Image 1: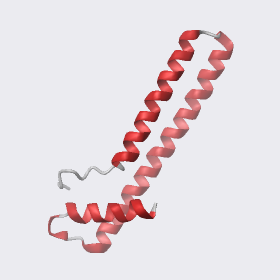
Image 2: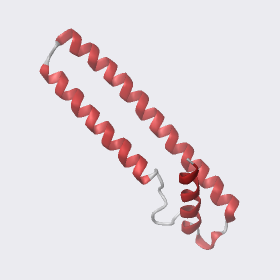
Image 3: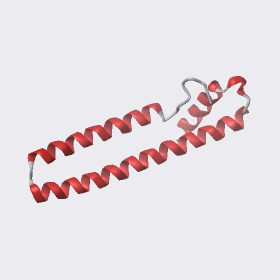
Image 4: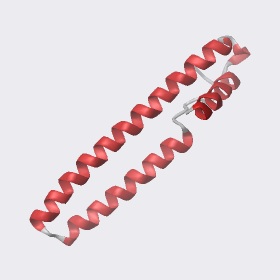
Length: 98
């Protein structure tokens, strides 16, 4: 978390025009970004757990091959989304426009 914070501070400072907010402003922006990342990851994990529980109950009740395939697809999609979110660190600062 500290590494992500310092990395975000550096990125925020680089993306600010003239560094008008200074070190403290960059640190607050980075903390806000990290909070958003944590919240997004937690929400995704909770949704995945709920979906998996529901699908497992359906599989036990129906025992259909199609449901198992859908479950596997959902797991793959969720893993891809989490990896993309963590890799980009949810920083919408690529253009430098605020």
